[in-house]
Image 1 (cartoon, helix red, strand yellow):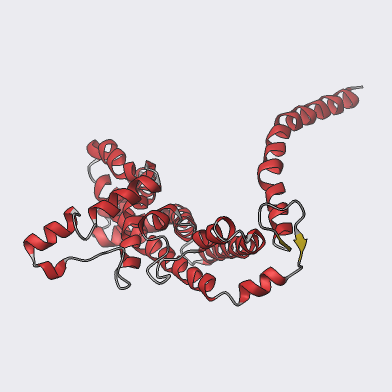
Image 2: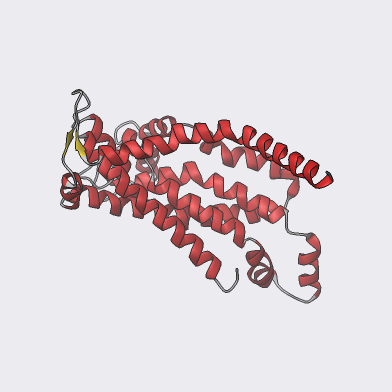
Length: 299
């Protein structure tokens, strides 16, 4: 009787847990699994968004995608933004976190100030920097003209040599606060006794960072690196507002390319195929980053 009663209670507990989880699973299926399935199916069809009956074309959209030079160029641009976001944004976040951590009294203030751009909409700060870097009336160009000469003026978002770096700068400015916040939290979780022990052993500032702080920050670093790269690869609003992918596709990115093919050219099948390929690239990249991080000798 005792065994039967325990089994009955265990089954009731399992059913109760399943009842709590079921609504979340239904939402995940409705908002993620089903759209993914529909997107994969749409990538095998030709549809203009208006007609009632899409035409099945098999792998034709993927064949067209393979020969789409603009899409693959946009992939290269996305990886460029990802590299800048990881190396520059991540390094800036770590350096500022180390600096702020030396004075805990001001940590709350700097957390709010440095994280503020992250909370703004990409459209908002995109328009903001589009005005700041305007070649005619932008304050940045006016300042450069005052301290230098008129030759320092540039259409930062409109010239092929500067457009990519201008967009990358805006992206880093708006997103580096995310890495800063995580690194600062990681630093504050390191026991002070560990650092004090290293100081008593005669370790200098660089040695303490290299052999004590950095290994303990590795889990945070993995998260920051993966999220930073994925967010940079999915950049959309900043590019749409500042350059719209130009000039000459110098700042075209996959997300913007997918949007244009679907909602401007009404090639929803081709846009879906681009989404599937781009999504697979993001998944593979995430797995590679986690595997590399786990195999690191310091992990």
